[in-house]
Amino acid sequence: QVQLEESGGGLVQPGGSLRLSCAASGFRISFSLNTMAWYRQAPGKERELVAAITSADGVNYYSDSVKGRFTISRDNAKNTVYLQMNSLKPEDTAVYYCNARPPVGYDHWGQGTQVTVSS
Image (cartoon, rainbow, N blue to C red; front, top):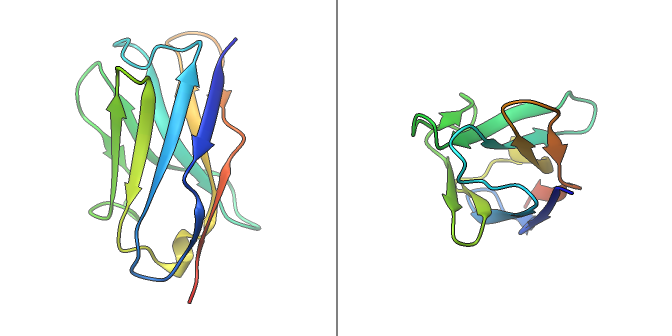
């Protein structure tokens, strides 16, 4: 059974930083055909892809809204994916979800962690 446990959310002032963690069990993040990603959903908006990482091509994906401010990374030994968020803006306020996508089958989701950027 796949489980994704997120942590690291909280309240931060504009311009501040947070690091989200997603510890995976039952899903090997280092497998070349698996993709790990972070999504977010703000109140009244659809869930959107923020960043993704895969071992297959070594290229990470970032949405235009976070490019240059957020960095996705992974620690294969800990089977954990991170999202380092810098220069946070009020519009980054959302629930952030960890996503694990295998090459076949359905996606797996974490429970979400709240990030609030406010002065």
